[in-house]
Image (cartoon, rainbow, N blue to C red; front, side, top):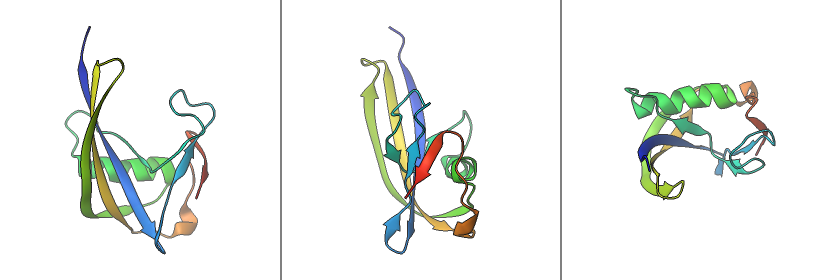
Length: 110
């Protein structure tokens, strides 16, 4: 049984005391139809702070800056084969919210 690790980032973009969430498209293999905060996998050698900015650009077409680290948490999945470390950041919008455009991986936002 091969074991591996994954590092991911998540972004809490708070606007008017609300957090932006996006719904995974019904075509997605993992958690289709569920809402989540934007974020994603850290590429090998990539700084997680750059990852969350890239992911926001790719997933919702918005520019953000990091305000602060919110939380770091971890879980084991895939029948004990995968260890995921998640890094959550509180973000600040550096763009106009009207520029929000969802990627193909998402079909709704709130």
